[in-house]
Amino acid sequence: MQPDGLDRDRLPQHVAVIMDGNGRWARQRGLPRVEGHRHGEEAVREIVQACGELGIPYLTLYTFSAENWRRSEEEVQGLLYLIETVARRRIRELHEQGVRVQVLGRLHELPPSLRDELERDMALTRHNRRLQLNLALNYGGRAEIVDAVRRLAERVRRGELAPGEIDERAIASELYDPSLPDPDLLIRTGGEMRVSNFLLWEIAYSEIWVTPTLWPDFTRAELLRALADY
Image 1: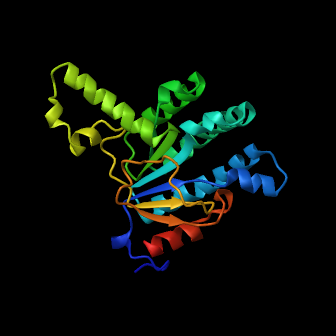
Image 2: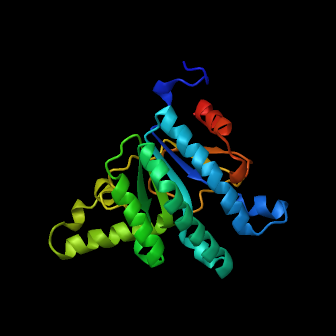
Image 3: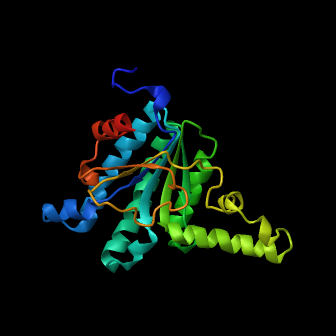
């Protein structure tokens, strides 16, 4: 047992987080919604560092959902610009911490400058092993399954796979990152009791921990509470 009260042998190997509440946090303070996202970035930094220190090997953050495109153009552009700016500013720090950056989602649909930045970040950190940070960007759980099924259908068309050979393992092999283990723990901030189209295939057996705390106010201490409950 460590000083923080956690048994390192019982920690989850993969933690996934729905970072909800940025907009409400900003609204409560009379600020534009994008300010909530900016303050949420500090919470991301704190939780990434904490997971690395705790020895949790995989962390997946719901960064930009496919549904986010439906928000106002001002908010969408502000959020995408923020993601690109933060990626460029923080990547050296993440690299020095031994963090490997991966992206889950339809990367090809993102703006070219953001896509190029993310591809550089993934290339730079590809050999790091302390923590794999997965950014779910332009991501939807249903879309991931659709994309997997399309790839399987193409394999069937080419004669590489028989329809009767399609099973859970075959579908899992065509997900965005087939090597990624399923989340052991899904954390949702902001108090809403739903999964919001996040990792629908992968969270079939995940424990779910919901807190009313809005994402910009989420701290290492609250992460430790979630891990203690796991």
